[in-house]
Length: 230
Image (cartoon, rainbow, N blue to C red):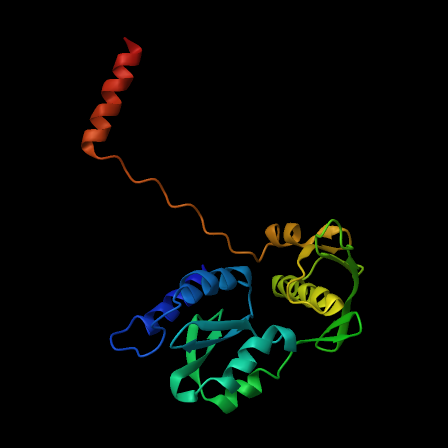
């Protein structure tokens, strides 16, 4: 629900009359950005979003430099007159235009840090990562599995999402390849997506109620019931 509200506010910007950006590669917004918002929809989460003439960049803030890297790089390489940078606040549902100096400062603010394989949140260690890689088999490239040892499985939802992002970073760093897939992520033996799916903070849109039958449908249903009773 919060992700959808943010997305609607993002759409309102790019779809307003005369908006000069995002003239191509709109799939970045309408498919990839929307899915990324949904995959990180948790209380307290903020994002940085760049809109260009062709395509967008979106990242969650506060996790790790590698998570921010593409957005950070995009600010540097793209002409400031041909892009805009926005701060997205999940809880408030706001999309705020930023100047470059503010954006660069926000990209350097982190709630999480990694020392070797130990993950800390705001200075407190919360997990140690064990990265396991498969070997090349019949031409199939290696994949990674990450086991987090924490002594607990109860975390805020935003922390579970952060650990999931960090696990992908660990696998990439271990193989020095952006193309290495992360197969599974576990926290004390439980698959992380199971913990996310069952988390009480997770927002799941309720199914839309069925529309009320029209008078003609009601009459047809009554005729059918009478036929069955005959």
